[in-house]
Amino acid sequence: MNRLQSVAERIDSLLWGPQTATPPRWQARLRWLARLLYALARDLTGNLSLQSMGLVYTTLLSLVPLLAVSFSVLKGFGVHNQLEPFLLSALEPLGESGVEIVGRIIGFVDNMQVGVLGSVGLATLIFTVISLIQKIEQVFNSTWRVTEQRRFAQRFGLYLSVLLVGPVLFFSAVGLSASLSHQLAGQPLIASPVIAALIETFGQLGPYLMISLTFAFFYMVIPSTRVSLRSALIGALVAGLLWEVVGDLFSAFMAGSTRFMAIYSSLAILMLLMIWIHIGWSILLIGASIAFYHQHPEYLTTRTHDLRLSNRQRERLALMVAGQIARRHAIGEPAWTCHDLSSALAVPRINTQNTLTMLERSGFLLRTADEDPGYVPARAPESIRIADLLDATRRFEERASGCLGTVLDDGVRHIEETLAAAFANALDDMTLKDLAATQYVSEHLKAQQKPCDSG
Image (cartoon, rainbow, N blue to C red; front, side, top):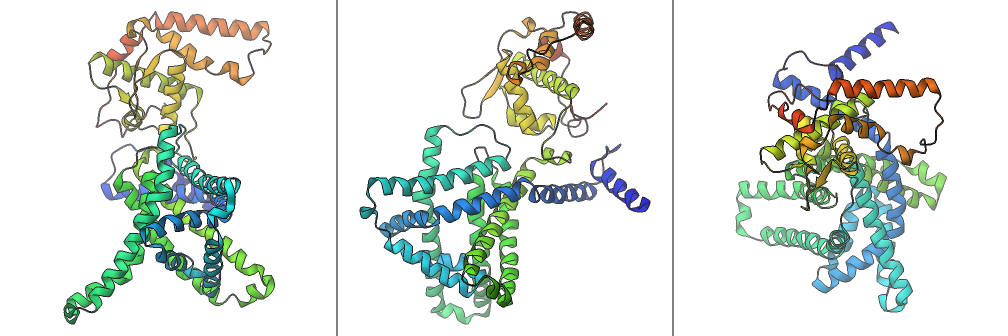
């Protein structure tokens, strides 16, 4: 038992312990990979699993209406015949059960006549479809630690593109790929062994690349934040590989599931469909998590899902953020954005955003009107006392917490008054301008010294 505990402590020190010197690049990448695997396992056994289960219910409720809307749009562009092959490909791991499910879904879609639904039925159909897209957006925003929603006009444009433009582009690409392969099959160039090998390789990698590009499209478009193309592609390629591997494993399970079918009888098909939808959403969200951690490696510096700051760390971060904003404002450089501040200070974005929100609501900062807002001092930095800023950090959301009416005894009140007086005397009317004059962020030091480290 002591040996196992010693090994666990050694691994914990290697992953999360402070480093006295800059490690070799291979060692740093190995450490990052180990932290990533730990974070994925932590998320998969926590919020990610619950979110994927919630999406299973929403998907089953909205599947037929979504396909009906997509089918109507695709029919107008003459590519509606690709809907059934796509469903067969998506449910291929279910084997014969997948074929039966696709047949029933297509039957439901064919029988759904929009003209017969009436205004209430049409509104219900659109509501269920939008609910699915909205739920997906909420889950992706949770994965990307996004707390602010898009404006209504942006969300309307997103939903419209997903409902109308997305199916047309995707199924058109699938049809074009199939048509191109069919035309090339009859050309004399196939006589060349090299060309034949390339076409065979394309045919084998085609489904993997198609599902990976689809995942990358989701990762870049749906979250209410800026996602880099490189991070989205890395997450999508891993998710696409998982989709293919897990699909083959699930197909093997289906081949030997006669006992499962015998136990659940007619309910087996529904249960298998729910299991595969849950697996599919889990794979999609794992890829989203990989893309997130690749773009925001600062979230891999903590064991927990989000960085939990102590009272001292909140004060430290508030001083760092306010000082950096005042310094950049004084030298006339562009205003700091939340993303840039998080990268410069090596602090998770959600903690930086909470600090910016606190300073803004307390009257120390103002945000610009840009799409990705920057932050500037609300008034002259020389008029902002550090003592007032720290006091506001300590008192933030006291009214909302419900503790405003707590009765204090004389001893606690005396301690608070003594601390306030000590702060005022120690800081000696130091202002934000004075703090900004002493601050800088070194590109060399920001990866080694984090404002949230203890010490």
